Image (cartoon, rainbow, N blue to C red; front, side):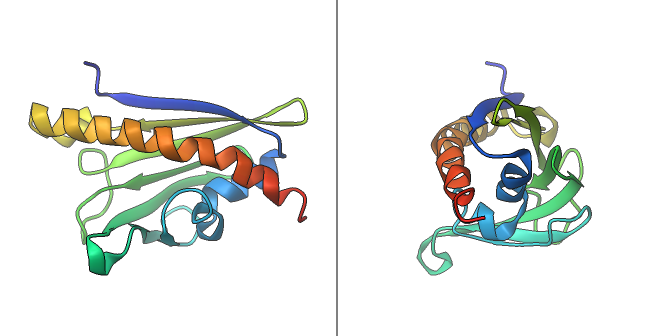
Length: 153
């Protein structure tokens, strides 16, 4: 099993500017992915995203913006230990690349860094599969959410 990179591609019937907001803004991230997100969408900003209710087994995950080039690319590192600076070897890197396509946007998401984490094989395989499954649930939510925004602009 590869366990190195997860890739997803989705076509969104919305402009790259709208899609960029959807993948970079905490307000919009909450519309399709985590239950909460707290960070500034600028390089170097540190914050967190939250899955579920923290009082009922939910999870707070550290989140650091790596790069933001509106409306073409947004990347962040996450899953690093709280209190540590996100870097290769202690976090996973997610990159959203956006390209105009017809009347919409082709969005490509890649997540890398699994092998560099130094996990035992079982942990690596479990975490990788958990993320494959997670993106399989959340990425399909992104396009309808982004498409619903273009009517409100």
